[in-house]
Length: 445
Image 1: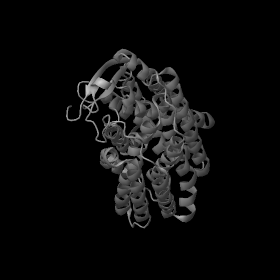
Image 2: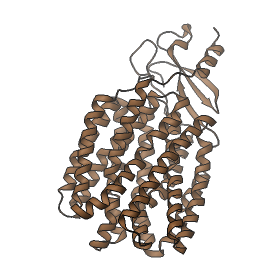
Image 3: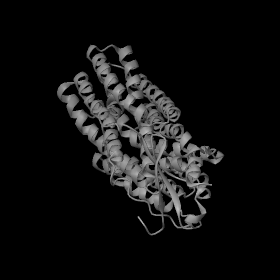
């Protein structure tokens, strides 16, 4: 068989998805959703702190962003640990630490110690964010990754939705420590489940006939694709966290809704957003492209934030709630596309670190959204602030790459025999075509 025909076979082959992949995906979703519940809890305590304790929105936004700040500190570290030690250890150990720090937060006295405990809790919860995406890329073939990553990205809206439903009534009736105790119990139970049920994906980056990983060149060198995806993802996080942090306060304080009714709207927006992530991921599989729907999402983000600003100005309660749900759905739709694109462009040996960098950039922006947008709302009010937030997705539109890029490691069975036992193929594909093939030998860059 010629080299050309071998490469054609490699590209056209569509491997089946292992059954265990769906079980592992389910556990990964549950793990990240539980971590998100803890990270989101302070945002849903903000209305209580603001109305009962007189805390300013800027101060409350800072406390609500404490877990996110903790995630920023450790996402790349957890990603590198997943590359080195495997996803199973990283997710299960991270959840154990998350449970411990949630307990610490529940028994903290004073806002300072509460903030420190929340920072540590967010730092531990970042383990699932960094490693669960790597599990998806490792277990699912490319023609199913968009759908699988969309399902995986459900974890964040599901965690936020659970917090929106549970935290306000629990905190109002029993105190702010009870939601934190619940987060500790759930993350502790899932730590055991993930340790038992998650398996690390096959290490396809090993050389033919060898268990040693084959070095792969740095995907950030010589190409701006990953940098552009990281940057536009940071921009698209701004409307997402604006709505998740201040949505409950806006509905209750500005529109006069009860905490229960506002929580139901927040939960509905997160559930619809979760379904939207799956739909967009499946669409990207069908199109064979991640960046095309990513551009559509960025454009839609501008439109929905401007529309929400208009509805906020006239204070049409029901219409504003519907638009809030639509805006939230659009604001979270990009995450699965961006994560899949990053993992595919980075390749198996760099995906953990690249996804850690992706998460870090997003959560740096998210940490700034709380105090920054809180101060902006205090200065100019909700309608104008929501309109100004639309600038972020507008800037992201111009950063979306023109075409997809991904690295695919081809099965060792397809490597020509004359290449020997220590050589493999790495195909760099561009717009669905083989761009070039190169030999990679252990010890060479």
